[in-house]
Amino acid sequence: MRANKANSADRQKRRSFLALFLAAADLQRYTKKETNGKNMKDKTAVITGATSGLGRATALQLAQKGAFVIIVARSNTKANEVIKEIEKAGGKGQFIISDLSSMKDTKEAAESIAKAVDRWDVLINNAGAYFPKYRVTSEGFESTLALNYLSPFLLTHHLIEQMEQTASEYGEVRIINISSVMHKDPINWDDLNYKETTYNSSSTYYQSKHLLTSFTYYLSRKLKETGITVNCIHPGFVKTALAQSDYPFPMNAIVPIVGFFIGESPEQAADTPVWLASSNEAKGINGEYVHHRKIKKSWPPTRDEDAQTRLFNVTQGMLGEWL
Ligand SMILES: NC(=O)c1ccc[n+]([C@@H]2O[C@H](COP(=O)([O-])OP(=O)(O)OC[C@H]3O[C@@H](n4cnc5c(N)ncnc54)[C@H](OP(=O)(O)O)[C@@H]3O)[C@@H](O)[C@H]2O)c1
Image (tube, rainbow, N blue to C red; front, side, top):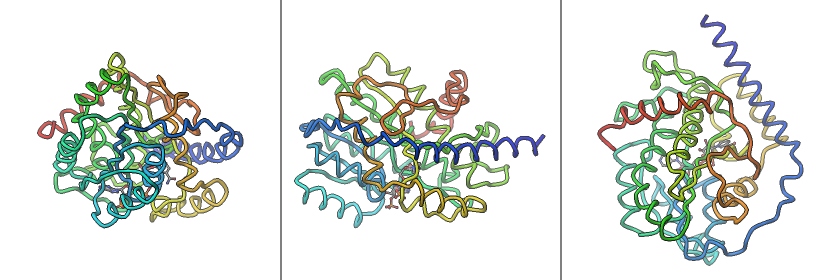
């Protein structure tokens, strides 16, 4: 039984790599040129994990479109550098320091954001990491689960009221979760934190993106009438620090090859989050899984509405004291 489960998970992972190669064949992806110029003027975008990679490129591009960008980051020095780059490019922004693997910090970050501005139009839950070794946060959560899923859930939860206000005043708010094609692993319902289960860094990462994708669909339905849209993105293979993580075999052999053939720069990959956050074309898209500006289908278990509801309730239970 265990072996069957492992084989099925391996098959899913191989399919994910195949999906990445197929994405490379999507040669039309740069032909859509709608950028709508400085269409983010007077708008605020909040983005987590914007000190490197995809988040940094997305923050810079949104600032160039006129958005006031609030970046949530754990390093003061790195955050300062990004704000300087934003200002150098003629944009405006500010940073909030938070270790997003901590729920206490995440909640405080939400409170700081609420104080910083009274309007925000875009929230991009981008911060994420791959943990080669089992790590538990000081609050008792497995680190991948905490950073890649629980923190976006909690940050969003604490910002929703103000986002509803922005949506009612200005017509819309867009929430974007950065997922991955690497989400095709079942949810380990009995042990989401991998306390009793043998730690597998890939499965844990895949699970975190599965959870984030399911949460996206659930929230998009819940907020349907509010003017807030919720979508997630599979960015493809992006040449970032995360892509150079210390992966176990066979991923350590496969990842550099995939990267060589189909890897995109963070600036190229930022096209989709920027488009989804700012374009007229993407207005009204809700509850979707998007890749290269196109709506795709995520793995069927992520679209199971009963499982989404169960997940939402389980997550609320886990986060009780921080909600
Ligand atoms: N690269 C890919 O091929 C790929 C593919 C699919 C999905 N993704 C997703 O894309 C998102 C961005 O990843 P990336 O590839 O751009 O990786 P990256 O360059 O490593 O960026 C990750 C960002 O998250 C921040 N971060 C990490 N741990 C944090 C913490 N505890 N508190 C606050 N911020 C934290 C990092 O901050 P520091 O600068 O301080 O480290 C950095 O700004 C992630 O959600 C990732 O899972 C990436």
